[in-house]
Length: 476
Image (cartoon, rainbow, N blue to C red):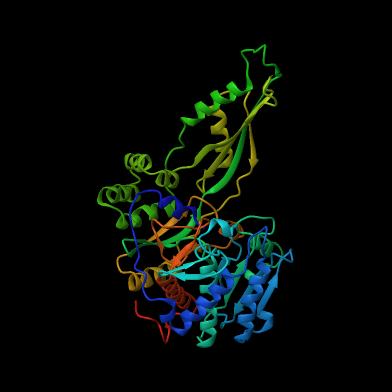
């Protein structure tokens, strides 16, 4: 799940709701089938420690094979028997390179005693679907699967292949499916670009979808350790030189530092387009940033929002401390972890050099413990953005289509580093003040799930079968 949405949900204390719409019992046959797929996936425990993505991959494979997909085009593969990945291909006429639809099957842990209902049973209640993975991200796994089934059932003439990858260990673990597929079976997922269902979700305010996010970039993760060493000694005979005090002074100096704000192509587009969905005062400043890079406006936006501050600059923050070896001994070692999230075009070496300069103490060792892995931004390609714009205007009039940079990370990192552009285009609208991914009683609105199915169906058709519309597209 994109951290952008979790951060945005903390920006303003708004009381928002999205109308529940019709219940699952009123759904169309395609919607009922998608709901059944979601129910089957939620019903399979795919946590890393107690579950298996292999069972979920096999469940989807059975549906595809029953619908007539050739066995050679439905592959289950991976390094671990419990954490396999599904890759399926719906073949087109080969006029262009395939597109890849990506979602992960694994979910974070959910204990029955923490929830008000069974987290591994899809429950429809009061206009919501409850269950672990309903928003992160089994909803999109079900929607992508149903989209492929429908394209085949309707015999849509495709200009290019559509590849579906449902993968393991995105939430954590050593068997990340995207990494493994790139290293061992790249032929299965090689595509012109990827539509990642695990980022860029639409956001609803007061019952209306106001933001159609498209994640085209993400920040780069890096951990740096600050460490001080002293001879130590008996605590009854303290000396002026103390490792903990030395480290504390260095951290105090570092806490006052801010990296300078600046824009890249994605964030410039973000500020320009996001202004349409914000209150007047904020909107005016956003336009000033997007149109002219106004530094005063950048500072005002940064001061008012931790999220916007993170969008505008590289950030580094202390996240862990350790020191000493006994209560009655002077510390021989004191250390701290500094977690950095770099702008995609930031030099890791320059960030480390800046940390050392600001710390300003040669007795404090500065060491990279988790090196930065570059994440090049994806180009804002009209082939992708134009249909997103038009479908959004038709389904959610007035919603702003906003290219965004995620302040967290997703599996798109691995694909971008392999040379494949990635666009986060989650399709299920989320209530701004009710984002429950990774939390208790995770849920999505039933009506939002159906909207996500409709949006995805229209988008995939536009990308792989231009000019061909659904015979039974539901009116917006």
